[in-house]
Each structure stands twice: as structure tokens, then as C-alpha cells.
Image 1 (cartoon, helix red, strand yellow):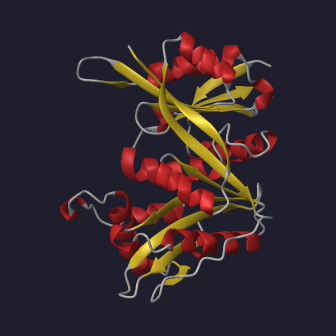
Image 2 (cartoon, rainbow, N blue to C red):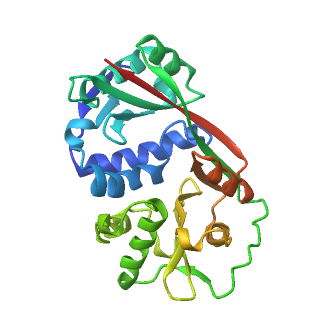
Length: 308
């Protein structure tokens, strides 16, 4: 099949990529050898809309077959990071070489000294891509994303909630400032409060098509503040419930709140019909938390980097 490359052309491509990712994920037995749908939604409406502001028309590329159907997508994650989405029916060394070359030309970042850099998160199952990256001068770093999964048929741990705390769904718009502040405290514990940039970004999170407020789970502390949270992204086509993000503010840690909000998210997702739950982890504390909640099976994606 002859493949033709084109640039991103607008909102219609956003929906086209969504359906493509669903198809590829199911063909890959729901393994994350390409992005799952929630990651595309989360990247489009939060990561890029709120943080990086990368121009989609210049950094997202689509390959279509002579039948007009989408067969591959190249997109950035962070600046200088490339993500590859490939339909298994067209996977080939020729296509991989072309996609990597396009990434190097359009997605690499240029340092003050003129050095270009590109990073690729590559699933370990993609041995052909690993070989090509190595030949092109990329080096694998000792950093891995653990793409964890668990069946929803398994037991969901019954986690008692600490005295005075309540686990529930996020409330209405009036709670967005508190939800945003909890996220800041959980993921920026060492930064000064003056660096906090407000809560309006959370409106974009809620614009993502997969977002459901009844699956945006929080733990409310005795004083009324949000102490922990997890957002569950349920896709009723692939029947996957993905957890992203999960966090607890520093002053409320070691109370089992992370487990408590995850347990509630799992129960709600199973009731909706999810048959698989997923979550990604990078460091030992997160590994330990997710394993305790049944996410013991995982694939890994390694980080490759080239500077030239």
C-alpha cells in the first residue's frame, strides 16, 4: 500500500486521529504500543493547550493509504519529543525511517549552541524501531515508563478512608480552584506558592471528550480542602479505564488516600462496564502504589535520545 504524508489540517483531523487510535489499540490487544485514546485527549486539551502550545499544523503529521484511510500519525508530546502511532498492517522499516526523519526535521529542539535534540519514548515491543534509532545515533537512557494494566474481573481492594476524610466525585465549577490547587501542591511540592499560575487551566481538562466529572475522584479533608485526587478516563468503545493523574498533597500523604480514591475510581469504572484498567508509573513510590491496587502486569517504554 502506498502511503501519502500530509500535515495536520484542523479539528476534523482531531476526531480522525481519535478513531484511528481506538482501532489500532484494539488490533494491538489493548497494549499501549500506540497512544490510547485518553492520552490523545489529555495531550490535546491539557498538555498542549495549557503547557506547551505547540502548533499542530507544523508538528502533527498524518500518513494515509491510497484508500484514503489513516494509517500512521507522528505527533509531539513535549517540545523535542516525538510519539509514533502506526497501524500494524503497514508497519515497516521504510515507514519507520521516514517518520523518524520527519520528526528530526520538524520536532527536534535547537539549543543556544545550535545543537538539535530529539527524544523518543519507544515501547520495548518495537524492536524494529529500536534498531533504527540505534543506527541513526540515538542512545537509550535508563528511564522507563511502566504501562500498567489490570483486569476489572479481579478483586478491588477495600480501602478504609482515614477518619474525617470523604471520598467523592469533584463538585461543580466552584471547586475548580481547590482541585487545581491540590494538583499544584501534589506535583510541585518544592516550589513557592507564588509560582502558582491559577486554576483556569482545569476548564480545558474538562473540555476533553472523554472527561467525566463523576470519574474525577477526590478525597476531601476534614477542613474541606481537597487532599487527594485521581481522574479516570473511561472509553466505552475499548472499555478501558485509564487513571491519569493520581496525586496526594504533601500534608495529607501516608494516610492511604491515594489508594482510597483509586479504589473508588475502579468501582465506578467497573459499574460503567470497563473490563481493563491502566495506569503509567515511572518511579518506585508510584510502582508500589499501583501494584498494591492490582496493577502488577506491565509493558515498558524506553527513552531514546539523539543530539546532533
